[in-house]
Length: 124
Image 1 (cartoon, rainbow, N blue to C red):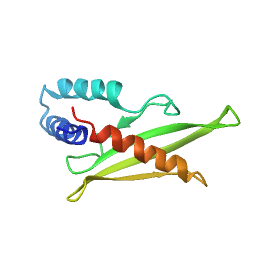
Image 2 (image 1 turned 180 degrees about the vertical axis):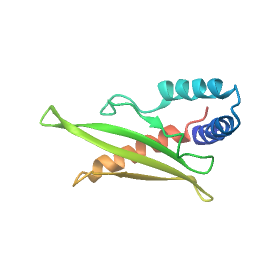
Image 3 (image 1 turned 135 degrees about the horizontal axis):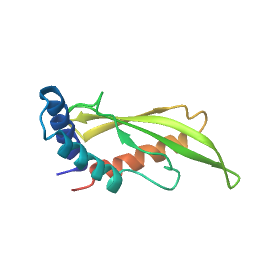
Image 4 (image 1 turned 45 degrees about the vertical axis):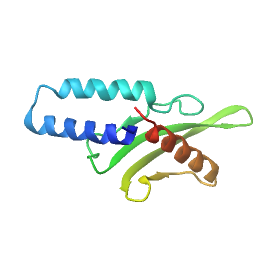
């Protein structure tokens, strides 16, 4: 199973448990926290927390919130807040959309896209 499939199933379970006050909610949330700690991007500019927004995600759409620490001339020079939306694709398995205020830094947007694509396509 690929990471995006596991996360979609986990979000479905969390959403279902929240709707029905199912006691398995804490188990699913702990599983999500473990995946977040173990597999979500961190370091190399991903210095803030990357999280899966379970309030707006559902089994057919995953939404991540994160930030990237910008460097300029060897020093940290601010943050870029961004979201990554993941939707199903019949041709490719999933399609990513990265949104944020990247100004003229399209290389960063491509790097974020590549980093999340790699993480989500990982076999787990």
